[in-house]
Length: 171
Image 1 (cartoon, rainbow, N blue to C red):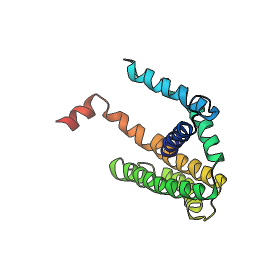
Image 2: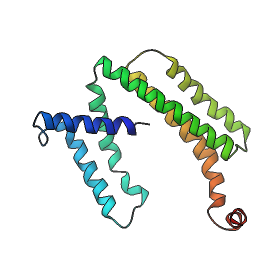
Image 3: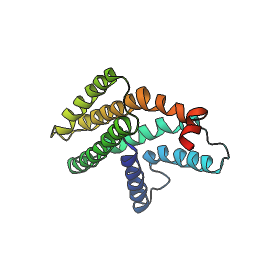
Image 4: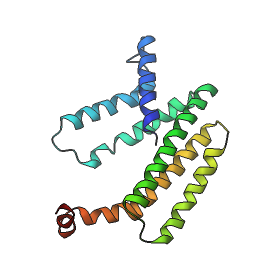
């Protein structure tokens, strides 16, 4: 759920560093340059395995934390609004995929999905604009998105990755 804020932060810091003529001396951009190199390397490479992206995660987390830490109250409010919109869209996608496209087979899972959903809804309805609230909402939406996809969607999707089920659907 942090990707949109990350890209906004990268463009903001690069633009600010360019205006201030500190493009190569800005320490917060030290977390951005390796990510750009890894993305270019992955783009050039003929093999694009998912585990190649793992070195990017700590760098992006450190950059995003330093960028969010520099927020003014006005910027924090804008970030909260942007994240709330993104979270609502992610909830709609998660519910749509897990209950419409791949219906839940075990209804106990539905109860398990409700717990982070209620916690996230509580955080979304809170009016406090704080970094703690911003982070907690991100954690809850990640759990809400991750649980149903790992417990329901991926297990049902595997049956369509080859063999008889795929042949039946294709014919």
